[in-house]
Image (cartoon, rainbow, N blue to C red; front, side):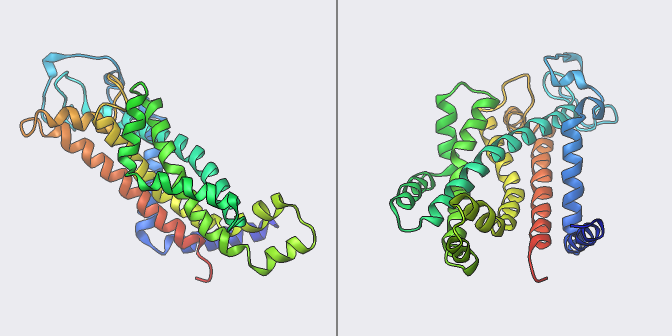
Length: 287
């Protein structure tokens, strides 16, 4: 691809993406979230409040100029802790998707290409077992067996996330295996690796990338749920679910302890959903 072709393709993709203004809003939210996660120390007024810190003289203060989201019962700035929570939320998303997507896609390709064989039966019946269980219940069960913490939450969510990608790719691969370009590759003696990853996989990428963008919000929500019940980040490390759980005990008097973390979750999930819609529009052909 020449430099001119690259620029032309880039302009075309951006045109498709930016036609929906909400997608641009989502992109801005995603970039802002990444900025908060990477530069939380410089983006917050009281970075020491994200660690083991207590100042009872400023405990339970309502939102003000000094503390725009108020303080908690230990005198810690809620806004600072929210910004640091973005780091944990996005870290969980990156780890979960970077493991579950390759595993799920690989198994989906293998099962789809070998449709109707014992390989298909073994893989997809295993997937059915995982999908038959409620996702949040399965994640809580796995996290409860392990030691509570961020690492356990990541393992739990990853263990229940890969089957969705296997199911998605399986459906596409099982139909693409009968297309002429796949049959032609088989006739000329192409290896199975070439057929799976050079012929079938590229035709699945747009759907996979769209699902990944939309799944970020769900991963964050599941992670927050685990944190809410004490199976996620452990104090004093801040986490969205943990902050909501702490604040719920003091509702409605200290409402800001619960409302602002809930709004932060809605903010980041909404942003990634808008962004995912833009990715879908951008990669959709014939538009």
